[in-house]
Image (cartoon, rainbow, N blue to C red; front, side):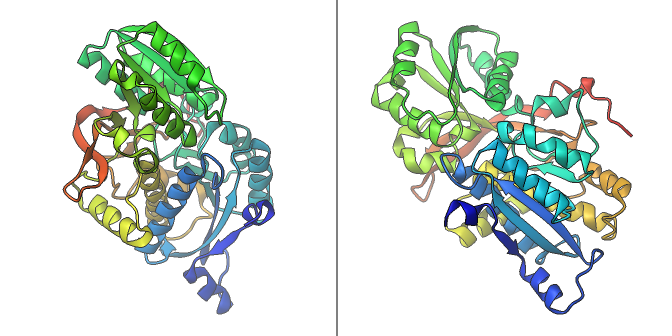
Length: 396
């Protein structure tokens, strides 16, 4: 599929097609959702997992959201802010979407989201949760169904402190999400920082960074390098033998199924933090994991779980307003109530529309089927709220 085709792909659910064919799909009969995400390049696997989780939720909801047929427009932002901005403007002005979702990276979301919010279109983030909108820029039309960017790394920072690491080296991707993730680790880590290094987005060769890191002789290394960046880094970290003297600490993003598959046994024993795991013991998670594997032939990642919950959040809110999505005040209240069963268990929104939720320690192991995957070890944080909510004065 070429770039032009990717960026204009429009998918309709069977429910929408049936309604259109019957000539009965009006504004009150369907919900229009714009799904703008990174579906190609080094970060493409993340957007694909979010999309697949989102689509599975629609299937579980009977091919609808809140009882309404779904018109789903899917566009690849190619991890480029200019592509994202143009696509979002089309979705808002031409497609007249009721919701938008899908963006993976903060550097795409931050320049794209103002036009969406100014148009009073609800944006439900299935991934990045930037500091900007958690605090002073909190917005009635912006909800985050995943985490604030500091939260998952912060849980690992808390674990590193409890484990007694004294000197940790930090490497992050040089973009807003990367910097906020490193800040999250530092917020909860009470030891010394050996150094703090940022690498360009898309970098795949880390020989220089690894050599410099080893010269500092830290007891542990924490990285935030999403997608293909993290895959390459971990492969090179093990290949150089750095893993024999330095403990690698990871956010769940860098030790999930999308990383495990290409890295393999080198990740065994790796510890990582996450708000979700496929072995969490609740009915909705068991159904999600089993059906995702059946539908797509692979275990879901935390990205897929976030995409699933995003659609289920929409489903619950639309149902609670009786399908009257034109009543935006009521719809906002219904979204805030988060009346759905999350695959991660306990979930609720704070005053800034960011989650209050638990965070776990996971370890990469071989399961009873011989698969390399994560298992939940323990809970690191309970009912954790992000650190910026006090700065939010949510407009009425």
